[in-house]
Image (cartoon, rainbow, N blue to C red; front, side):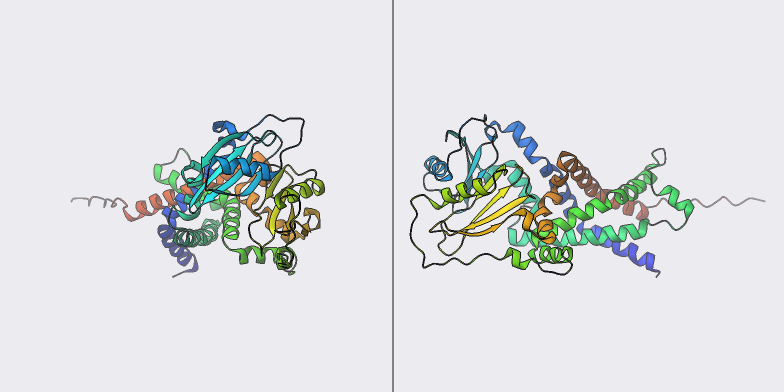
Length: 374
């Protein structure tokens, strides 16, 4: 068996084994790409009028959210921008809600059940196939790794052997037979989308595996690990003096002072005496790359760590960029369009591949030429 035939067999059987999962993951990813735009069109409580007064501190908004859902604990609070509502995460056991409030007035705008939210379900379908996370994550990750191998093997199979073949590999012959069109769609679209699809697949694996993201960051740093930059500060549990204001309000004020240009602020809960309060200031609303990171003492509000975006290594910046790369956000709306189209092409690959395989297995028998009679 030649090397090319061996690659073809590998490509075929890996595709048949993972095709359905790749189809589901790709389609759900395409839907999820435009979640913010669709939410803004269908969920009016996400937007508020800009007012000429400061926003309320998180403790006030959290108290209002807790009153809306008695028995639920408020935790993560996100200020999404000057013209957007603030979201407070509420939880009780496995029940989770988002309370959306006007950050200027404290008015409760909406309490949303995340377990029944459409895009939350799409996200879980994309990440876990709606299976228990421990099982679904493993199944999806194996399928994505298989997809990466298929992309590489597909390029090997696509690679033209001569000039004549090269001319035929870059365009779809729309006026050809259905079988030929399907063949061209599988090969030509797969080639054009392969580089972008590889980025989407690898960034998805980096979300799943921290060690992989750490390795990519070290590679971007020329071998220097980013582990030190990811290290969390130690909390001195002997410090118990309570400040006059809630710790989350101290964190909010400090971030506003040190990151005045930040449009979006994420403030973690201060309910763990041994872990720092995890807070982040993002340069642009609904974008996650440019970020200044802060850590505060959960009891005293003491600032334990400041990590501005400008001071981070290239590897750490690449790690921060990973989600925006995965969704196309890094290039704005145009990048989302690219991610959407590439996801659709990736979803089409198992379909056109199966049709191609089925057609080869069920070829119409060739008619033998009639024998000339004497």
